[in-house]
Image (cartoon, rainbow, N blue to C red; front, side, top):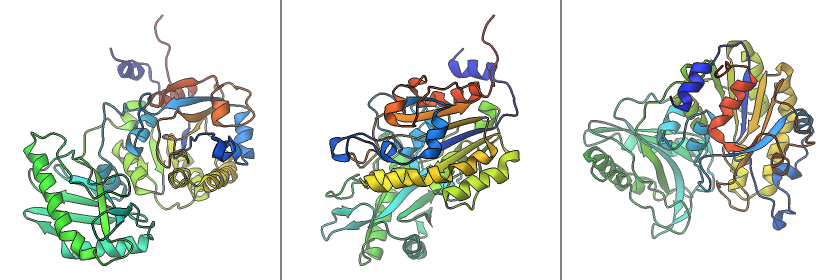
Length: 407
């Protein structure tokens, strides 16, 4: 019997309410340049401090020691799925989050507009973070000009800011492909190639993407700053066990950005649309409290400012969430976990392998008697350091959802 089977055998149905509050990219590094404090440590967080005094803390390894995760693996681990065994292309996640109903054989790519110089070199991977309205205009333009390539339908849908998705719908397609994204400025856009060189279906998908670039780039070449685009996470949709079947919890997702809605939808969470701020997300939680057992609440801005290397903005984002936290506590969940899907240190300006802090509160969590929720405090917590895929099991245990194992 494997460990998942054992957990399933021991799982009990309860009426408890569980909340997973994810501050994307929360973890950071204390460096001399930043006054030897992290944004979380420097932030004024009276509400998190209050909660810390009656909670347990620890650190989580998002995938495995030394491995830097993307948002997909980071969140799948938080949802309790092994991110090494279950790999999902980012394009699939983004497409689902934007409400696209993928069909068998669809290949989806997550894309974003970028800036290219006269030699085709990427000078800004995010095109200055163009407004959503500009992205929508550009996607509409591309959609009107490119609807099919050969026998394959091309579907383009705008997301938020500079992001969009492209879906290729036709016969004989599959992923995954390598990214048509250099992942840094100063380099040209690489080709998207089959990960499995022997797959004829993946080869066809790669040829389609090459042709899509050939047709699409001339259409937007005079648009500034968004005169190019990058594509990554190019894959088809895998089969995954549904969250409710796996944990006996009816789940809901309260997220703003499409990718995180897509990740939640992938495992069968109900997307509850409409909220745009963290206060509105907490208000939605209050309104939906009686309808679901598990709430995944996602907050993006800690990650965004970490990627920009903006220490003060990341600190302010943490403070904004802290000010809204009393709303959530108006209907206090039986189990509350607050963490990140990974660390996004300002010094790194991107995701990193560093374990993210986690705080767990319930009637049975005990208290580590720590005055604050910080990386330094989390190092001392009773939860220790554990793999993120076990967080949901800690939450279930604190909800008294496991029968005793053995005599």
